[in-house]
Length: 322
Image 1 (cartoon, rainbow, N blue to C red):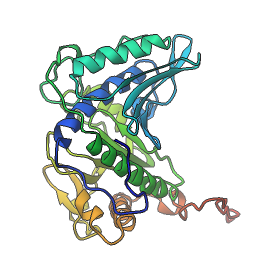
Image 2 (cartoon, rainbow, N blue to C red; image 1 turned 180 degrees about the vertical axis):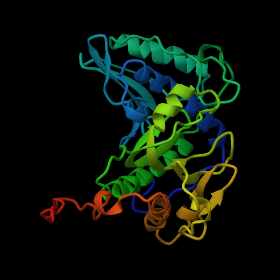
Image 3 (cartoon, one colour; image 1 turned 90 degrees about the vertical axis):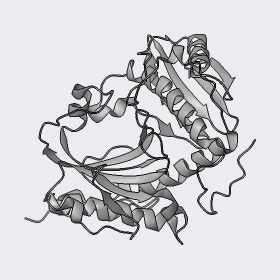
């Protein structure tokens, strides 16, 4: 199957068919690729060294240094393949299809070894309840190509809006990247100030990792395609530490709301998809929830912000006032 979704047309619907089970399988496969990168890349602040990135064809780990080789792992959602590549020129691929996690794990290790990489990873899922080691997960898993293609088109659209949002911030800001622990595409802005020590306590995630991730004041937003907590795809936004009055802030659009259970603002994906202008609707959510964190947290917005970037136009830099 080839993707025939019009990139300038409506945002595609998620769900239906075998998407739920396909998403669960893809989540575990992404963890395997992510763990390969995590264990070979020097630590970068807030675990930014462990993430994946959206590409025109799917997702990639980017370059991973591996004992003298440079390797990338890629999910191609057009030809529906997993590919390992290295600087030797070697490429090894296998098809994405109905299979068990154990089968994917074995095939991924064979592909990595074939291009000169090493294959040792921490082979147990993270951030999931009742994790089963990858090699022991022999439950049959469906892979619905159409659902994956629609998911990829959503990622492309969300990635573009998140990146545009990123351009209007001069302070420390993350890349737009996918965290494989929860399978969420995320963007984070920072005030520049240290945060209180995070209490940790996230299931199946080291407190040491959590505390490093939240070492500084942050306003974070992201897209989550659904999973264990909810089948519904949602956008989220939260602040750490959460300032007084945050949960009562009036955010846009009207479909956005604060979830006391989740401790963050939420906006259903379908509310964005069905709006007259999904890009503008999502941007309103990103801006209004960031403003809640920045205004209530007393961030120095005059120093941290700038007009949104435009293609081919350098940002204007004014002479500092005396």
